[in-house]
Image 1 (cartoon, helix red, strand yellow):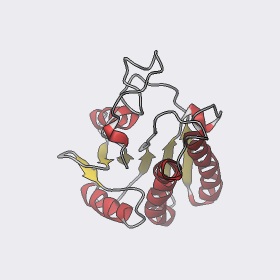
Image 2: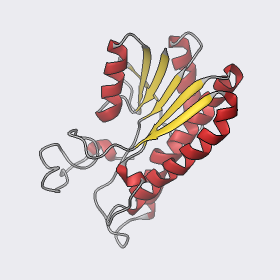
Image 3: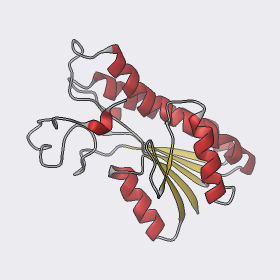
Length: 195
């Protein structure tokens, strides 16, 4: 099976990348910065996913069977009074629009083949909102509705779409280190979150 995973440099995406590779699948991973092992590309730029897909298609022999949208970001906890328009736009662009751009790029070949699987990694924040996370929750709720609509549209074309709702993970993703998660104190300098 040929699989493309976005956000494969850390957290859930990195774990999925390693697990699927070790299980014998042909896997291409993506990260915004890229590496020797990962394809680079900015998912919020509508033109960039086309380059990512072209590279992935070359490595996967012209066929992507499964797309896993695992790329995601967060910002330090902010109340609505503190949430800037830039933070709002950044979270929605990466967490929702980034997935849209990727799906839009891979969907034509899946429809033509009448087969394909799209997995969108959301969060428990895509099912329940809480204080000081309005933009993150809104973006993850958007991913929920988007996936449900995509599943309904894709079904007649043999395309399956599902959404996953992971809870807190023991990783450095987001604004907490694994050590700080229990205390609720964000890391001082979450460099990976800079737009």
